[in-house]
Image 1 (tube, rainbow, N blue to C red):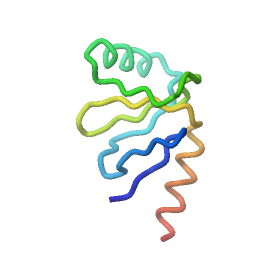
Image 2: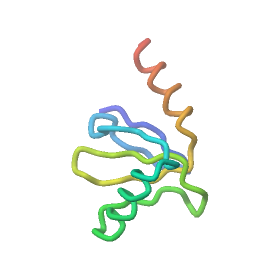
Image 3: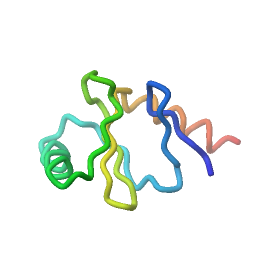
Image 4: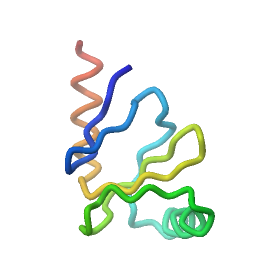
Length: 81
């Protein structure tokens, strides 16, 4: 099990991640709104602006304040190991 840091001492199991997307697109905003209504959203932003949305295989939506570029660098490091 590999954990990915999503900011503010929070981590997600990388094996459960389906997608990591930017929070700026309108369809993603609708998905987040629906997840919040259905109690399927996990807010890990600690009050900061949501920059990245992580979608898991259990249909949970995780909100992160880290920029999506941070996750790309983690994926590059993981592939090299």
